[in-house]
Amino acid sequence: MTIWRPWPYAAKAIVQHEWLETYLFLWVTFKYPMDQTVTPSGGLFECKVNGVLKAFNVVGWIDEFTLKGAVLPVGTLPDRVTLEYKGPHYTLRTTWDKQWEPWGPILSYRAMGSPFSGTKTHSALGPTDNVDVSDIGILFIDCSANNVTIGGFTGGIKGQHLHVVRLCAAVNDVTLEHNEGTGNQDILLHRGEDETLTGEYGGWTLACNGSNWFDVSHAKHV
Image 1 (cartoon, rainbow, N blue to C red):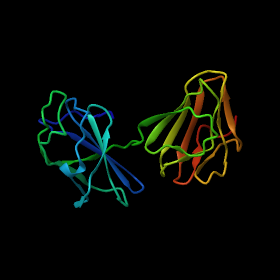
Image 2: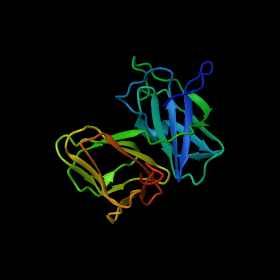
Image 3: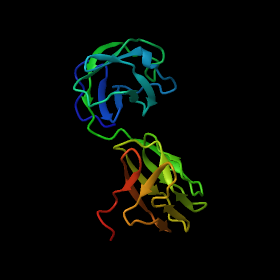
Image 4: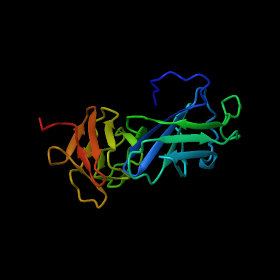
C-alpha cells in the first residue's frame, strides 16, 4: 500500500484502516524491511475502536514493509482507531534480526481505498461455480492449456471489486456465465447472457453486493 504522507519524526509505524460491512481492516507499515518468515500474533497488539478494546487478528504480511490485520465485528465506520504494540518480540523483527521496539497507541487514519489487494490465478477448465475470491482484487485467468469457464464465486463481501483478467491470447476461450443459479454468488453480466473472450486479451470488472457479482465494465452493451 502506498503511503502518501511523510514519516513523522521517530515514528515507530504508520497505521491505516478501512471499514467494510462488519470488517475493520488495518495495515501497519514499517519504515524498514521486515522479516516475513515470522509473523507476530494478534495478542502482541492492543487495538481500540472508538475507545473500546477489540481483539486484533493478524492476517499476514502484504510485503516486506506492511503487515495486515483485521478486527471484527465492527458494525459501523469508526471515528477513532488506535493500535499499540506490546513488544519487543522475536516474531516482529527487521531483515537484519533487530526486534521492533514497542510503541504506545498510534492513531490510525483511514486508507480511503479498497482493502482487496490480493491476487489469484485460476486455470481450471470448469465450469467452476465456486471460485473463492476472499480478499482478492484481481483474478488472473490462465487459459494457455484449456478453455476456462466460471459460473460463480464464493467469499465476496459487500463493496468488493474484482478484476477478472485474461493473461494470454491463446485460442482457448474464457467464459463468464450469466446468472447461472449456482447457489453460490452468481455473476450478472451487462448483456444478460454468457460472455466469452476468444484469442484476445481483456477482462471484466465486477462489484459485489454481498450476495452476487455485477458487471460494471460497461454502462450499456456496445
